[in-house]
Image (cartoon, rainbow, N blue to C red; front, side, top):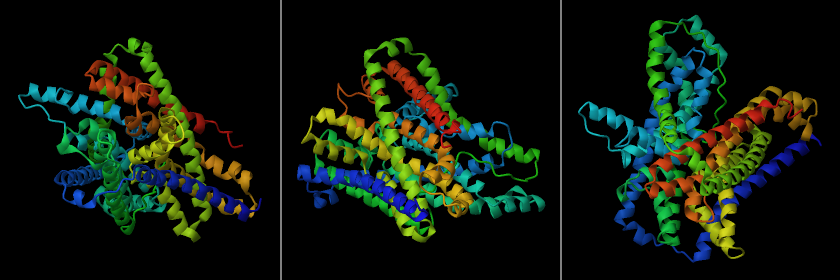
Length: 535
């Protein structure tokens, strides 16, 4: 196969994968509209005071969550990049844990630390102070910052790693003080990443579902995503759900457009923690300042994991593991997670290979592929799942169709993250070896074997692990279609919480967390550690 033919094939496959994603996500929306003859009543929505409150709260919590996460990530990223200690690489790995942790488990851990009966409330009571009131906006903000601050910090660390080595050498030769180094080198690099990080976190918070469902605390703390779920699950009002979805899409699309105008790349990726060599002068004062930032930051991120471990071990884990309901839920979760992760990895790899094949000469088409891969960030998965669920009901058993809808929805949810992981690695490899490969006539399977495959090997493991974690911890699609014959671990955990079986819920949270983190580690090492996989 010639180089031109290889590029055309890659572009065609990538466009096909993007079209499949867009068809599934947009098609579910259309099917819901057609299958139910739902006509949104714009006038009633405009005059709905409850909806006004929902929209304002959605924007308020997303904006505050984004500001807190980004503001906290800037000093944390700078401290991590300046730090010189043996466990730095491990800390960067630990910053992946919140993204790997099932959202429902993370919510329970936040309650254990920050809740009314949590660790911090107990400490405050011992000092004669009132207990913390977690539910509502404070709890949602804490949970969103817990999940998104490490993500923003890693994006910024990746931006600092891309600073030319000459800049660090010059800073060392001039003996620039820390503030000057930040102003002249670090801040300009971080600033280029801010629109991308902020827009990504904002979209994740606008469409947040599980955390708001668990920590919202009532009608006064309801977001559009939860209102969409309520309109479909409890009221079965597709017209209202569609109208709310269109409103949510409009809000997130406006933020996306603003971020693009500010120069942010919403499809920006983050690496695996590569280290740029720095030449800063060491001093006790600088080390003390770095420690004052890293210690509370790491403690904030790791304390919920400690809470999960302590509370989970207090449960009767043996009885839970022997429970047939838990075993069936675990088996269902594993099957769905592996299927969804495999599908998302195939789609993401095809999209990334097509983007690289398009090159700099067709940036518009490449941008279109990136946006198609990120559609799930602006379209409610609940609406998509409901639409296809109704469509499949016309041709098959409605309960038999549920697992397929959940697998497809979870796969689509993982694609944006997989693209962000695979993209930078492939781009870097082609920047280094692309011209040599072209001059040698490498194309097709040969180029994949010697150039693209080795470059994506480690990121493939991380992307697959992320997709596994997202699917294992998902509650959105399952919450809509779950029943006695189709139960996953997060859905079972939600049921036990609803029936006030808190000890069982804590044990299930530990089981789910350990399963998720263990599979993530195995998947990453399995795909990244086999050096000969592409040789």
